[in-house]
Image (cartoon, rainbow, N blue to C red; front, side, top):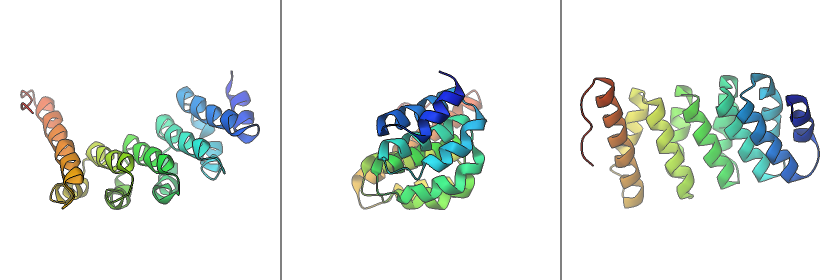
Length: 167
């Protein structure tokens, strides 16, 4: 199926058809789909919004960062999770404050994705947010933040040709 067919499916058809189209557009990594995917972030169907958010990360749609950051407060937890993942894929340093807030999200999948994305962004501010989360009273949040920091430390060690620490 070509991009034109997928774009048509994204605009019409059942929720499942639109969700699949959003997913396939991401896999094509064609930046020409970015505008249609950003519009799909407002679809009534949570699956469409979730797949559109992730697809924007896959295609490298940096222009979508502000819209994706707003989706961190979407009513659908999987939309929030996909938005958080996409922001990490895009290394969206301007979304660090929004991702740091998402560490407190009620959904564990969102918290985990937000922390992973902060680790991918790895700016001073992102690392500071992870260090703060590592001291959180909620032991699950603290553990996830510590794991993310440990993985970040190990990736930095590898970049300098040093062996990874045992976990």
